[in-house]
Image (cartoon, rainbow over all chains, first blue to last red; front, top):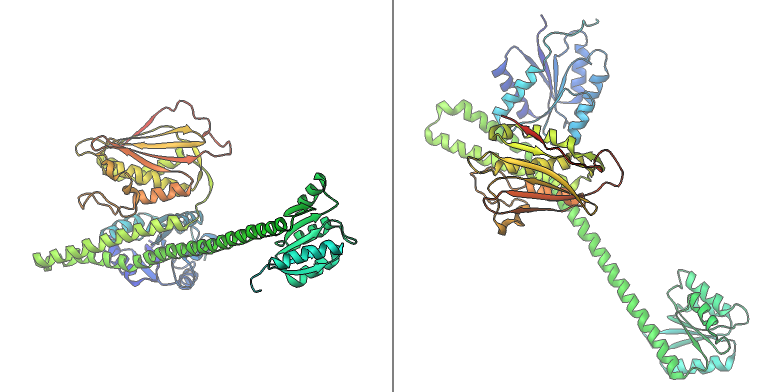
Length: 140
Length: 392
């Protein structure tokens, strides 16, 4: 059985903590790995390649140095990760960001909530998007 | 003689040149004499005169050609050219001179006083022109400055609301978390305090969020593409799903045209108008909202009609201003929705207004220019069958 896990790319500690708490309230069995910038996210994915890929990537867009779009583009172009759903989780209400995310292959675009209840319902939606099982065998 | 106008007096016939020179000197002008076209041109370059009194028949370069050269060189084009001739007195010759750029044409014999008065009149005219163009230039600079400060202000509103949002989101989120987790340990009074913090921060967040969307509408140059409004309404209704199902609103939608504009912004207009129609419905009455379109002089007129509480005549204008609200906290909102609508519609070259009376419902109307391209369906709007979308 593969353990379900989320790679969460987020530079804001407050948002990360809220996601962690909301996630634990829902489903403590989902492991959440948090990294705070694009480079660490890509590093995590490359070391996890074929070994421990996350079941879903939760992605902030406004990150230091590089934007979250880079993670999205890299994941979609990679042969090893292209079946991992990416959910964009951002404070941006701009429709251009939403359209760009979906065009780059994001599974969903969720605007960061402003209350804890909304965090709960956002995380409930995110958990629903975690694939039940690996859809294809991984090459080693 | 400071301030006196400078005149180049050109004639190859010396007695005439001398006589005119005397007259002009006597009238208080600075006068330089030239006996040929080339002399005249070099004196112009040297003295930067206000006016040239120019004989038509010159030994080297013809006076009409001299005039053409003066008027075509940027450095001398503002010099007034007064052509004068004792021999070329026929109408076609005067016409040719004026057509080549001369400001006036006199034929000899000219009374000395008329000569001076003509020169003065032409100088007056030039002075008025200069003042006008200086005023125009000042106006242009002021306008530029106004544009820039308006840009700055919009940029500021955007940056401020954008940057304020993030920390406030942290506050509102953790306050709500605290409300949940700390509630059992707090006294009734403490819970009330916490509730005030939560309400206040949430309200501030909503205001800033709206300010952000309002400043974004003005800041972002809206895309220009052909937008079929019939495809916009479904996602608008999807966004409003909760409100529609809670109120049981009956939304009737006629066939709508295709227009040129920004799909997201136009969708926002419909969302705000239909959202308002639901929000301001009469208690106990099912909202019935009718979206329709008609064509009138190169414009589409789109209406969103409701059977809600209506608006008092004295408020029909102010409701389109930002943060203007007619209701207290009993109906939530920040008062930015209609301001956004107005901004979007005006940016699309249209107008927005409302026809309403208390208790009689409201009809919000806006116009959008017709698309010039003969794109899909929109131009051939025939007997629209009303489709009804109803959710329970």
